[in-house]
Image 1 (spheres, rainbow, N blue to C red):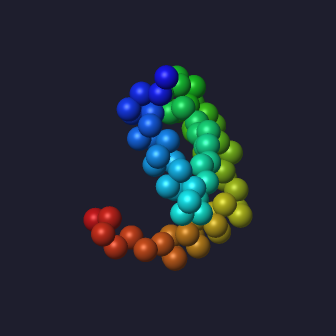
Image 2: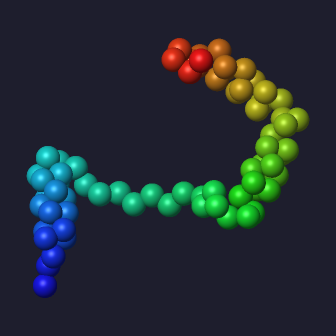
Length: 70
């Protein structure tokens, strides 16, 4: 038996589909995991001395619009 909440959710999903949208499920790293920070450090260290990464980072800094982030 459907609950009022599940009926509202289904109605909303149906409306979104009717508007031409579809649901997408994304899996992202769990930042609460104890190993997350260590993996970030490991990956950063791999890039720290990479010349092409320095070029990429310089380009990102050049084209980034930081207005409003002060």
